[in-house]
Length: 485
Image (cartoon, rainbow, N blue to C red):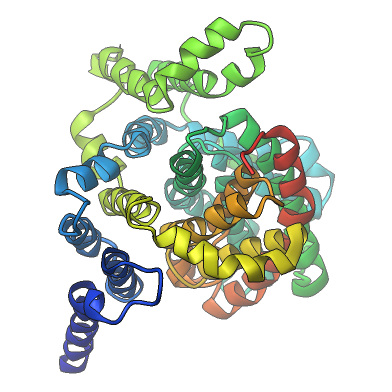
């Protein structure tokens, strides 16, 4: 215990040295003292994020930035908590929490598993199982989804008679977690990491990436990654599938209650929210004035309207949205505060008066120029994928975007919007280690798969994901997005 406290104190002391005193080191030519101060804050807070937690270190980050000359405290608070991304996530979490309190997620999962296609063979059953996780994960937080699906999955294991240590059980548990991460990179709906990357692109260029544009690249790439996952499992894990030949999970459907008013009303409102996010991109050529009006409302307005509607509409005498429970249990405040901190940090690092990104771009640009367009795409995709599997996803988005976007803008050989999308996708694919995402911790804690298995198959899937991002995701994104280069 004493050793742990000593280690903690050492880490905190080391980080504070960077935060408080890094600015006094001799600065390289072309780098101001303010840029050194921002760099020291970034390094110090990064140490805390990776070793202590994301809660109070995120607050320290914003507080420290407020003391940088030229960056006011009110400006940093506005950049972090006044950002539309912060509001978007807060209201979206309220809406998705309301959905999670209905049987909808369980109903969807069982609909996939008891379909005719799932009965065509063991691998058909497994693929439908993974498809259910991907479908639900496209508009649900990975953490919420995995918590719910672990309970459903364990019921399936009980019916099949699987025991801990069985390769089939390990494959299904790992695959479900992998699919939740894949789905998080397929759409920006309720997903932090793509949204952060899109936000950094907007900060750097003043332009926006539409939801439809992002999904045009994210969905095909995600489907291919899911297929790659199944191939990896079949070739290398080789589970015994015989128990599935006579599997019948239809008994689970009997435990589902009838669809009630709360579920109907909640889904109607939530699908209306999704429509406001997605449909404008499709109606733009036909109704440009309608597109401009909806687009001008911003991404935070649809979930805000959805949360308000869920608070107004009642079912069985109660509002759909229980505000107290949604704000206390439905919103991951530590993660949301870190989003605010990283948004503020990104604003400081890209501030033209600070000059940090201009300095980095100037130094790295000659090296990056030698790589060419393909080399840069591979570099940034691999960097985001590796870092997100070793540290925080949000830290990954912040670090890689802060360096990659200015280089892409100055180099003129890559599509900057597409680069931002690839970074957002790859930061979502945290498959391999417990520090990568809480979902892995939940699955390992269940006992159905262990740390070694997650590392082995997670890193294999990560490698496949990099290849797919570079050969499929980036080309599609570049084709559908205009980008200042």
